[in-house]
Length: 565
Image (cartoon, rainbow, N blue to C red):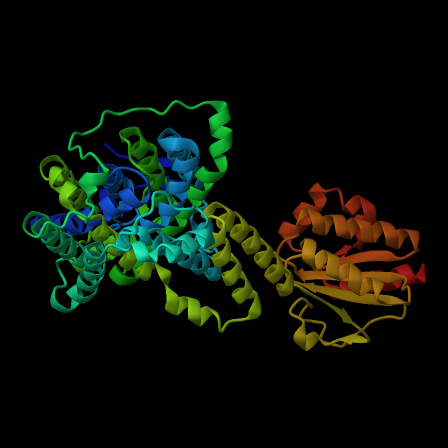
């Protein structure tokens, strides 16, 4: 069956269809090895992300199974591995605190709809161009926030409740450091050390898995033979279940939907950015090119399915995707196998998770937060122009002091403002006086190579770049600065690729004001696209068809005729 969906210029074609054409036993064996390893790598991360997000550990694994399978089957990248990620921890935890598990399910479902729409509306390429300082700012902020949330479990602090506010949280930590449990702190710090040094000895087996196995054994030995009962485990906090949940559609009301629109958009944008960033990084390694819009649709379907089975938001995971690539995975089959491995572990080994120390999972997340922090990129950006540094710091502080929803909303507004500012800077308006050198004028006809003298009483303005709101205002300011009132103003638009409604409005106002002052407007070198836009706006009725000239020499001749009249 040909599984291709077309909508205008969009073709939704999963990479799986292309890779299966020449698939063979050798490809399967490499994908099998990569899929098994990635599944093992994903296990401790899925558990840790689930718990840190405020849900039970099995929901993290269910997310990795359901979303990971769908992203590999439908995705636009050959090697993308999907599942829960650290970036979602803070936003998920906040939604659960305010709206409960049912609210999280609804927000995730809505985010899936938004992601599908992003793909159908061709927004995949646009999302990738969000300014780098904004991405680094909120990624570093998320990393600091994740690290902060793990301090209690890492050191076994005796706290009944922890404030939600970042600053208040650290004040409470400092005030209660004297309640640190020595054995818990040893387990937590030892976990961090094991994960950090593992790559020196093993490239295949993940340090997080080694740390979990080792620290779980140590905790059991301490409990059974040394009488140490203060080390809290997953089983002490959660009841573990290895049964696959039945599909459940969350009950959505209009009021709930309105309340959750903002968090849902945050999940969708964050998921889109992270998945496309992961796919782009993967492209550079394997020499491929992913389909960003197909990838977004796949991410959307995954987030539509995940909450039906009690899962949490999912996206492409850079670390797991790179693990897949480094172990030979080159097709979506590896991602499908990774989901299958997690399913087998969930069905047959999940009860063993109850013995994992919470301090060990905190250690895993501390290492994850360090990897997310991108502190080298952060420091490098601090040497950039002040505007970039300002955006970086604002996004970072908003993420840790307020929340990710505010940070992304403000960050996107800043991104739009920066784009508008830089676009306006690409357009300049200059005044040409006395004469025009034909050697510099590609617009002139080849037969007329004499210098063109600008007649007395004529002003020539040239707009170079898009004529939109920013440029339009600058054009008005430049003309207002001239004291003399000419009889004719020639506006050269040969280098204007497009004009927006504000540009047309400014031109219209200029013509109306000029007519009141007895000044004629002549346009020169208008391209077909701009010409069509001006005609639709009935602009030419204002100045007359005779004042629309294809070349500057024709425009100057027209100006002479007007003066002679």
